[in-house]
Image 1 (cartoon, rainbow, N blue to C red):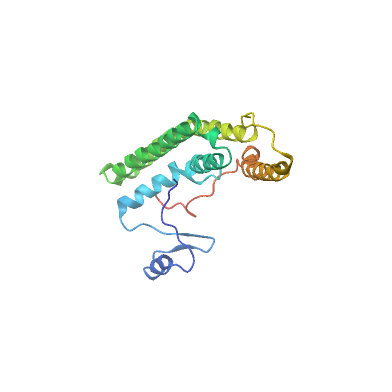
Image 2 (image 1 turned 45 degrees about the vertical axis):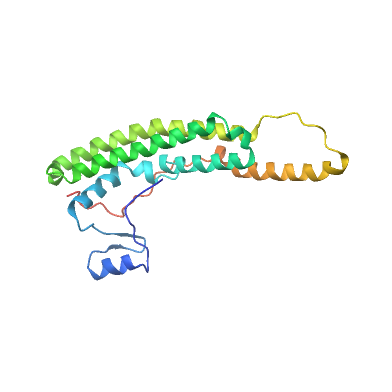
Length: 214
């Protein structure tokens, strides 16, 4: 999964509603608005800093975890015997850890934002800085786990285990070879780019401006 605030797209009812209410800020290159409920707005501003790298970097934890599940499905399609082992269980367990970590931290953010201390600017800033550090450290560990499993999937696709089979008859050899090489080509083209991706640029800011956190 991945998650964020409901964002504004040009021509949508949400844009029209916020403009009508005088709550729309920015322009077509980046709209912003304040959530009307103060506690919810505080929770979002904490999230926008703490989860910036995790949720919005193109190869951040959440996008990488989404890709991990997708590539496991590809492996199952092209190499079902390879994906039938412990790899699938480890992918599910890692995805579960990622999602639970997000849920637990967001529950802490929501509880703080809705508390009396959440309305205090100094306490809010301290809490935001603390949570941001915790999320970044947890993300580094979880990203490593996701990366290792992704590499296993790529390696499994590029070097699937071979099983001995009777040699095909001459009549069937040509058709079988074309089908096999066609399938392998699709699998290679789909999975191999994972090993070449290098996206270390900073994530885009989820909000175009930084109003006060309170």
